[in-house]
Length: 239
Image (cartoon, rainbow, N blue to C red; front, side, top):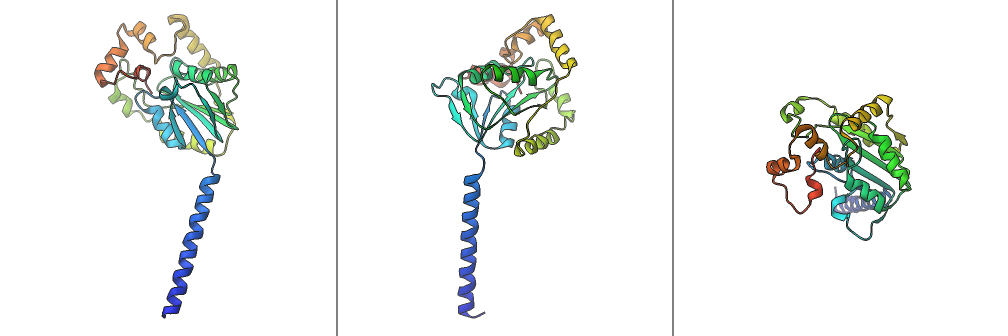
């Protein structure tokens, strides 16, 4: 290869690289903007939020802001299911925020029973003027420490990867779907409410104290020595 051929090849390579870079930049600029608002305690919901991608925003860190107006192409809410409902802090956020997006989705994580969590979230959303296109739940390791043995939980294959891949595919396709709720799901929740009463969905703390006669929040704080500056993230029934 002579000098002229070498210079020609180098120039063509440079043009190709520049064109590829421009195309990539345009693709990234035109990609849908996804905002994900999340609440997590021990990490399950945060893990899902990270896997789904987009800009992540912690609900406890913004809940006291005066301006909660957000606009994006896609807006998602990831949360742990507490007594079949979204945690109280998530409910407050939905009531207080103004979320504008042509596609909205919500994923609730749970470890044992989701009951009728999907339709309860749908009711919450509609009461506050929102229609969520996609609402689903994801079964994960149950880390409600006072009741479940984590060593035993980790042995159970809950097919988390398969669930997550399906959710990713659904969201990328902008699927409009709510996970079906059965009468058995409703009846199970009603039996819990009948036995223990309707309680604030604060991580199962109140329910756990009634069931186990212990101070759950205190026990988890001792185990994890979590900082006291964010009490909302020290609630139990943590996902």
